[in-house]
Length: 509
Ligand code: XMP
Image 1 (cartoon, rainbow, N blue to C red):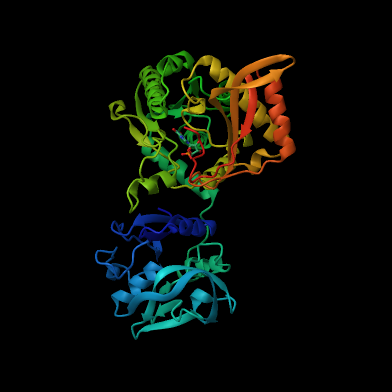
Image 2 (cartoon, protein in one colour):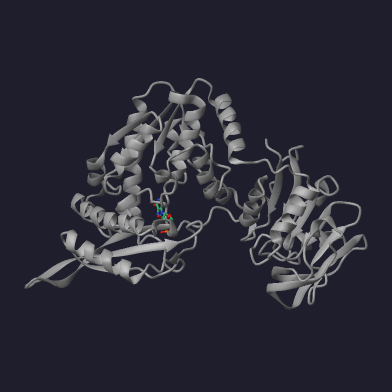
């Protein structure tokens, strides 16, 4: 295991952000739920206790046996974590009298303490708490305050245990990164050597040891995660990795051929399977979005199973699972409620009897991209927008037919190519077109038409959990609308989706 920081999660919305910030310092870290503390090995150099939506004053609120950590490792309690430390050892935590939410300034800050080194007097921090630490135990020193919060930060005497009531991980805490560096590098002594290259070398060694001379089969989607995972496994075991790329008939225009070609150039051993008709048959007459997802998921499993059964001696299934999926599935809150059944999470059914290998399951999305670039995967694959597993199947509202797919592929192609040609593609997290199940009246020449409506959607996001619509230039939208109506038969109206998520979602189904 690499040298690391352990983050114990009490359920704060910001916990993943703490991990992001630590990793930005080139230090590896892992998030574990507060009630499942892993064994404390010598690789763990320090512990961060996260915030929480709970109050330490509530009965049954998240608790932790601090004695297994205190005095043995440096500890930084953030918000709830700091209140828990204070309360546990005889301090007093009470509801705040005034609202402590938003920006505040550290009017007193003692920079002699290692945690606050080189921070400025008046440094802006982000507060978000309903409770406040009123009194500290005798052996705790106040090391920073704001005008309204006396105990904004403390240190326990003679040990490297700190608490802060503000959130250094949020960008509104302008010197938050500095504080985290002071903790992770200065106090915990982490070496800042966890880079893409180190990750790649360690993963390859791990994969070699784990897989040995076995064979691995892996389904590719053309997306970033599966492509990077496959490349990494391929570096480790070469042609013992066999990839399967299925044309489900719901991909973008020319995507199957182009992506298959890129994979072959990358030296991957890929079997391309044309299963278009199987998917169209499975989808015939189905209009309910979840039923469509199920039909597509099942058809995929059948095709994949059939292909892997043709291969001899396969023991492993490679998957492109990334860290947020893992955190979500072990989180304090439990797997979040299924609003849509995103079938890429959960993988293949048990009957396949394969052991799973997931080389990216400790990385965030942007780290996957960095690793992909370090592996010299072409930008065309690394920089791609996310695309849903069920593809155009959930962008055609109502039932799916081969003809509708063809229409939507043309529309989507004009839009996406337009974004690329106008230098807008990289400004957008994800874009695409929806074929609506309605027709509208139009005129072409002297003729009255009654044809399809398409909706264009382009959103900005960091993780797909929340998203906002992108303000694409009017001239661009005008040109794309014209091109679509002139070139795509059967479409006479184009609309642009200006809803954000929440309350809307990115996809329409
Ligand atoms: P929503 O529509 O829930 O989408 O805001 C969030 C992200 O997830 C993608 N998405 C899917 N991905 N299978 C997938 O693999 C699915 O069924 C699915 N539905 C939505 C969506 O494209 C966006 O990136």
